[in-house]
Amino acid sequence: MGSTMRKTGVADLPLHYGRAPTWLFSRMKQLAGEIIRVVVSEFGAEELLRKISDPFWFQALGCLLGFDWHSSGVTTTVCGALKEAVKGQGKELGFFVAGGKGAVSRRTPQEILSSAEQLSVNPSPLIYASKMAAKVDTAAVQDGFQLYHHCFFFTSQGNWAVVQQGMNETLRYARRYHWVGEKVENFVDEPHSAICCDLRVKGLNMVARKSEKTRSISTLLAKEKPSLLIREIEGIRNLKLPSVHSFSINEVRPKSLEKRLWLIYERSPQSFEELIGIPGVGAKTVRALVLLADLLYQARPSFCDPATYSFAHGGKDGYPYPVEREVYDQTISFLNRAVSQAKIGRTEKLKALKRLTAFASEKMGG
Image 1: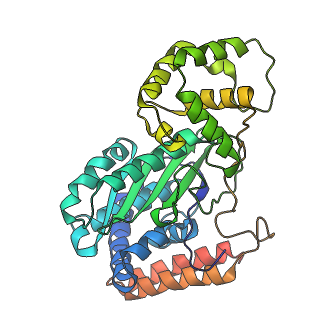
Image 2 (image 1 turned 90 degrees about the horizontal axis):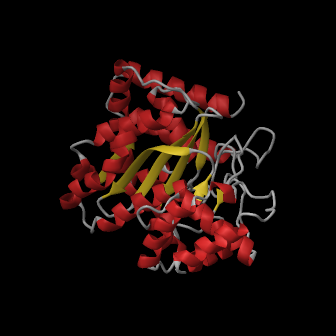
Image 3 (image 1 turned 120 degrees about the vertical axis):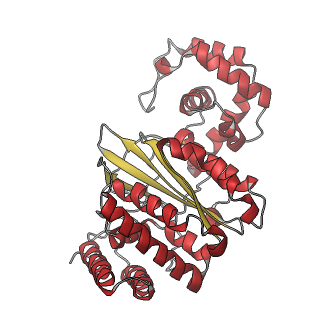
């Protein structure tokens, strides 16, 4: 892993409810605005996307702004502060934020379109990227975390990043997913260049390279007449299935599935990306096709958690790799410099730098 910090990934956080108090959020918004202006002025809007897409940088930013560094609220509150901070200044900064929590996330396409006149590019690819990032982490990566937050960051040049979060109420954890457009060559084949979390889970991972054959056969199956697929499903219901699956044929409801299969059949998708991009195709449809691909063609998918890093910075015990002090130092130095140049009061600067120092000390083990 290099020192450029151009990663995407996943972070697991304890699930906390509630919201930031008004007095805190107003200060977070002010400081966030100053940091954005400093970063864009010194390094450009594209570099800000790269920083936001790095889980450790994002976490450090949340601490610096004054929010609890390890709770699920970091994601929604920091994204909200960034969005409010750039409101009305997108054209000047060349940097925009759309989406948010719950129903607000569904307005992301409209919010991107509202910025169209201020962009140097066609907004359609941005809308597509937003929809696919959400669809992949819902239907293709089935890790037990339900998405409830989607924040889309983009520049006037058409580059983008995504920070979205899902929750698992049973485990009482939230998982954060990071994307950066410049690192995505294929939305369904290892789109995350780095994944980080402390909590490991088992679930269907259709974006793993190991799932390539399954993706291909699932797409071919989806172009078969639905009546044939339903017949196959009915035929294997009485078989003794292997216990290696994380889902069962018993959860497949043929009648409702057949409606979705006809929808896919009429679209005739040429790739797995096209397949999951079809409106109405969700996790259950994907699971049914994957199960058929495995049982009929021995195209076994990956059930491994896509997480490969522990909070994107390694661990004190060397797992999954040793802490990279140079990367830590670069992140802390970068944010330290941004705060120092921010046009805020001396007291606010000192408080922010104190929080950042405490965060660095905690993550480095004191």
